[in-house]
Image 1 (cartoon, rainbow, N blue to C red):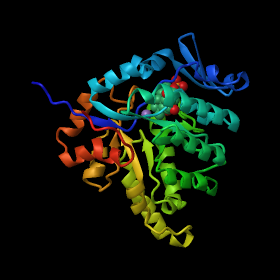
Image 2: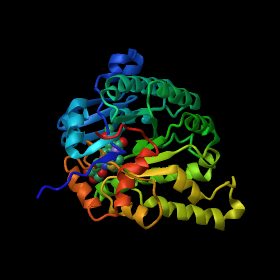
Image 3: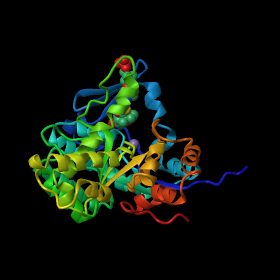
Length: 356
Ligand code: MZD
Ligand code: MN
């Protein structure tokens, strides 16, 4: 029996940048510290700013790089075949910029990535909504980078889920960026597994699943810092999005923040003009790939800012079985929930042409 194709917009995917990108476009002093990978003895080692960041089995590195990761023409064919119309596209190697400690290196690597992405990737189709990379080591660089990204045509920017240790997201140092993002109408997208966090915190028994779950917590921390500090309260037009962390934790966190804000009132500052739950439900968005609980967050917990994401082409995503996953998620779902999660929430942050 021919099963109807479910089409969806995806809030989370990745492009694989040319390996030589920074070496081709930066002076040697910076290029030699830009993200670089070396393959030997069955392993791929990632070097950033002179440090070893990861040593993966080549089988893992290859598994997250099907041809469409790097070739945008193949990517668009994959999207049509999988049933994905528009998609937000995060970096791959560009994620390593947020493990740098040199502001000049980070700023210049972000600029090169944004210029390449605007000219050689986003230009391929209005269905692709890449997230520009901001340097987070200096507020002035971040604000200038956001304004430059807007001038290059980006709809949004990406920031690491874990900020530099001396610049937590509740700090006043970020205020000019929150104001600039609200002014520019640019949502801030925080992708899990990025920033100064260690991706591998557990070894031995259970390590892989422990590490997989550990990547959730910085995204939660980002939301609590932005809400409790008043950053989102002061900028009601600013929308933030935590990608690839699932969604059911958001209403539960709203409850926790509401209780803390109320029961520990004597300690709370700043006081907020709206309750933490109201702020979260109007300004915080989240994406998931497979989670049935994400639909329950919408249907049963009143949290509507849930977007589905393919996480193409990563193993954690749905490629090449996207239609199977979408049918498992939505065949028995309320049509209003399906519409909200596949299109409605996405349209509140991003703009793609209607599917023809
Ligand atoms: C962007 C982050 C995501 C993660 C980290 C992994 C599984 C492990 O032998 P042993 O006892 O020492 O055990 C070691 C163990 C096998 C337990 C350990 O190596 O857990 N390996 C894979 O690295 N898990 C948590 S998941 O960090 C969010 C999701 C998977 C892809 C991910 C690693 C990607 C991301 C994100 O920043 C990156 C990037 C360019 O693509 C991949 C890799 C790199 C990092
Ligand atoms: Mn992702």
